[in-house]
Image (tube, rainbow over all chains, first blue to last red; front, side):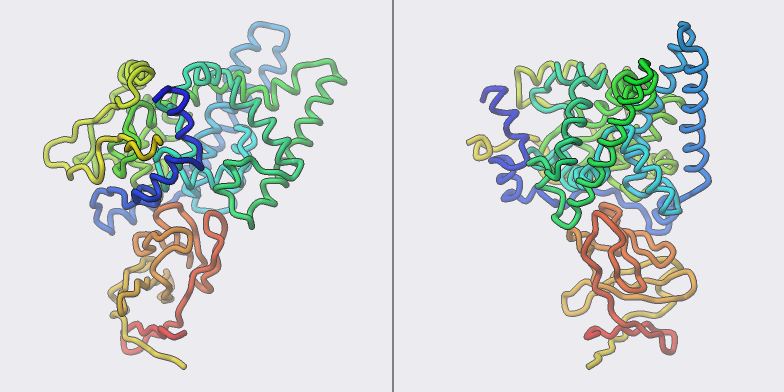
Length: 363
Length: 105
């Protein structure tokens, strides 16, 4: 099969979708480690204090960096200030969007919702449609034709990934999609996972956000200054590179069409700065297995179940030492994927492990 | 018409917790809140067929373990995406230390 043909399988309504449904891969029975109920209840416990601390740091450092950048504009000293602001806006918002979207960051519900709305705006992700999209990602993780969030397909769209380090594909697409939503329409894929009853919210947000960007650009034009765009919207381009670096470690190069997250998801150990920016999503395997566990408890969950898991990668660099050759090999060999080793005594693999699409899906 | 079924001892459920209960092949879930308030519902989330007995009970809300959908245990109301269909609840009473469910309720 040509690479172009295989990429078509990732569409959310096609032969791979049908195959996944018929093969029982959708809404499947996924492996979960045994954790005693009492311990799991401790791990699931929410904490406003921890999430408030991390949110104050996220917004506070961002505001200070932006203020410093504004004060120093015209000087090179403004560059590192806006870089910090940009990374907090265009990269750290990704993990805030994610955690608050699951509703696990705070104990208090409205705080989760407030952070979710802010982070969704920063990442240019419609909060309604992306919530449903991410729900599908958790139901059918890396199931071809079902998962709308597969970042590195087989073959990976390398140019797209590299351009997205500066947001050059996803951000313009998100802005264009926002305008489509503002006109009252949904995208074809979007319509497959957003229920009818929720669609008015997608449109409403599209209209509000379009108005915000129109006002931002109007102020920039009227004041003949880039500053409004540097502060609003711009960081989704110049500050987004770290979210791509983090996100690719989650699943790239691993198995497709499996029902065991140990085959398609990575845990990568990171330093405290990266863990703050990424809100512990580097414990991604644990998160997929138990999405109820808040980010601040994921290291403890890792300790609890690590006997069942492949060894975590010791660093981002170590993960990319495996990801880059695997993704390059998949450009020529669509059947190749990385199969991890389980420690002795771990629960055996659950479900199919070959990660291949049967011929019937490629017809 | 009511059909009350003796389901479990009240002490079988920890505070702010949930246990599974099976009746004639049907999955139910029985909950205990932090104020010794008891509830019973269908066993599966209305979004996908995930058993709620693995979920989190907090402030009279059950959170589904798969996608974090939440239901108000006092009336079964779905509290937002990804759950938009309410949860079927059953009347519950505690008598002589046992939880009884009206399975026709």
